[in-house]
Length: 179
Image 1: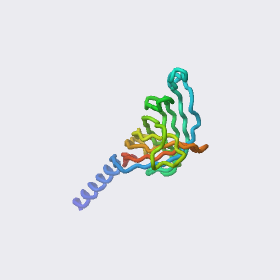
Image 2 (image 1 turned 90 degrees about the vertical axis):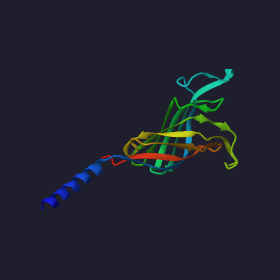
Image 3 (image 1 turned 135 degrees about the vertical axis):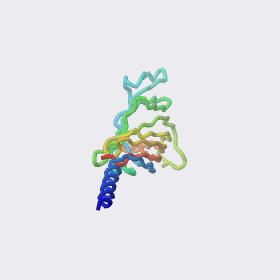
Image 4 (image 1 turned 120 degrees about the horizontal axis):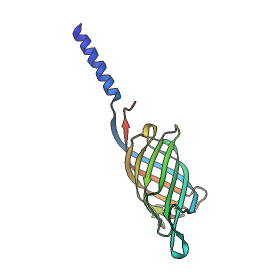
């Protein structure tokens, strides 16, 4: 009887320990979303706006909806600085996130350059595109502590109001077992 009790106590202790243990799992990540430019223009926080001098640092705000692995349907919000002449958008002023239907938020960041034109596989009305790295910066709910990275395959079309189209692929590392 004592041996059975020891086995039972060991099993209970093991189950309690295991159920409270955090571990990470890295899986493929894919997000497809469409956005609308809510604002694109001068903003003092981004830098100099001097069209005559060939420098036009401004703010871009883009909102939309999409679907992604491990997030399902989501709303997206991007706010970032961009130099409109060169197309460069650094990550030093970027607020970007996906909000899942259940309210969990996944924070992301990216930086790169918007290029004029289109790639062969883009629709005919594409006027610019960007293929840049992105980084996952954590979040709330099931995305707390999440990390990851990948590449964008994004483009802008002449259509309105939805004129930015985004296709992200990479990996996400989720922290599991937190209670």
